[in-house]
Image (cartoon, rainbow, N blue to C red; front, side):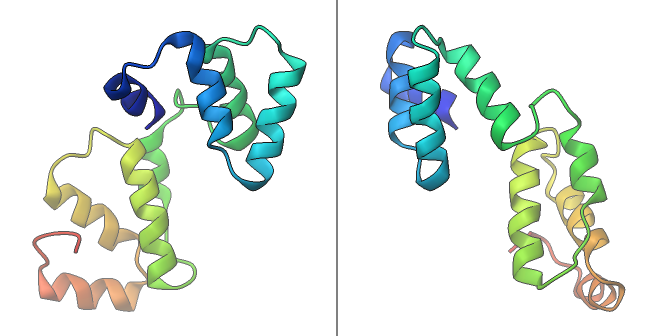
Length: 124
């Protein structure tokens, strides 16, 4: 998301770290401030790498595999949010029928059967 924003805004490389750190919230904001103080000459790639280490898996792992392994544990709403987050990283899953299949596969068995009987045509 940051890359897309910076591209559209024509943000200079020298401004990216400061802007990203400025827009962080809560614990991430404190962490971003500490990183800026600790690394005075931090470039954008180094900042992204540190963010990946601190806040999530690096983009080099298997986002499609993460999506396939996702299963509903709590509410459908929580599952849907987690699915959408993982789907955004699995950019190669572009066909809607594939997205629906992956989504329904992760639902609890009883709910999966009900949803599949409705034969949805989109994730909505």
